[in-house]
Length: 126
Image 1 (cartoon, rainbow, N blue to C red):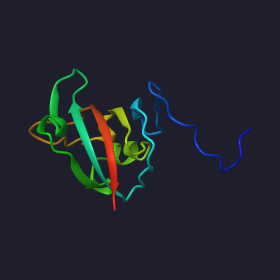
Image 2 (image 1 turned 135 degrees about the horizontal axis):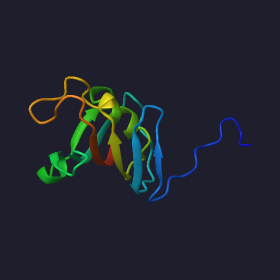
Image 3 (image 1 turned 90 degrees about the vertical axis):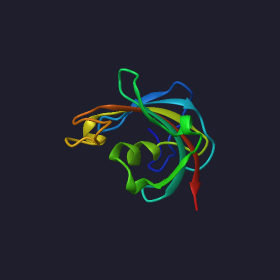
């Protein structure tokens, strides 16, 4: 039995997990920095694609990372990025309820569309 406030075990490359909301993740690169909180601003690189592998958006392809508040994006990103440490890269499978929901995000993302993202957390922006 662990202590009540024991730190979470350190992530490792290849570690897989899931959240209570159905988001699945795989650690691709372990970071060593801080973990962001729900209202932090972060700088990330990402590659977004459908489960069949079709890319719909990529800051990596544009060569320009994005900065945003974790409370300004889809719920799956808000929840998932908080699992990460600065410098880490995770792959996320985000079910449609935690993505763009019933409405989708036309024209690229349809209703009830599950999504996948490779996200590199570059830094928490202060």
